Length: 297
Image 1 (cartoon, rainbow, N blue to C red):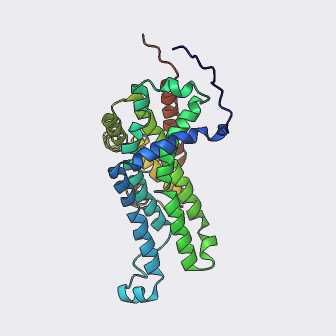
Image 2 (spheres, helix red, strand yellow):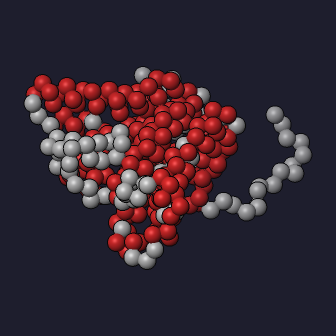
Image 3 (tube, one colour):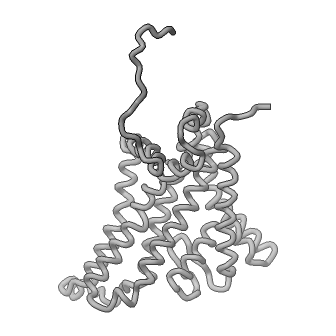
């Protein structure tokens, strides 16, 4: 189309800083999720467990409630209490990742939109980081942020001395949450990149967590070994969390949904290596699929 009026001028307004350009992706993705009633209700429902745990902490420090309910010796606010909170919220984050994660990359690949992203001053790493930020932001508000708020509430009600003795709980909450968040984000994005049908990608994420756990139990039972847990993501995360929260290896220790039976745990360094291997494999899958052009043979 011919241009008869040569009045076009280049944009000379303010530019977005290069380090924050990837944030444009979670900005619009979260805005789209807010329009969905299902995701809004689910996210609000995920805030109920933190409220219940906060109520338990408050009741433990309310003299009238203690006398009425006799709950002083019923629930101890310790590392195991916060570990169970992390387990509940991590499962909520898992369901969120299973529903939100598969829709992050697959539509761009199905509609050949990646060249439009990467034709701009936007690298592949920034694209992946932007897509990951959607899950990271949402799951952070479900895991370590309310966890640290509960820790602060307990420290303020318990009084002087408790904070210094239990500071490792706060660091374990933060680090344990980020381990789960990064693992889920990479798994969800890798499946979204390679499986363009969103329901199947979400189902595969459930398979990685639940079906692999069943296979690991079958391997351990048939071969009479415990190394089958290397493919059980829940067991790997549970062992790592137990070490972070300094929990003793007793029968049924660990967070809810991530319990580790006594005598069936594998060395902690093997769990770390397995989790790092899963993350590295997911990054490899993303690097193979996230490209500006696709060569079809």
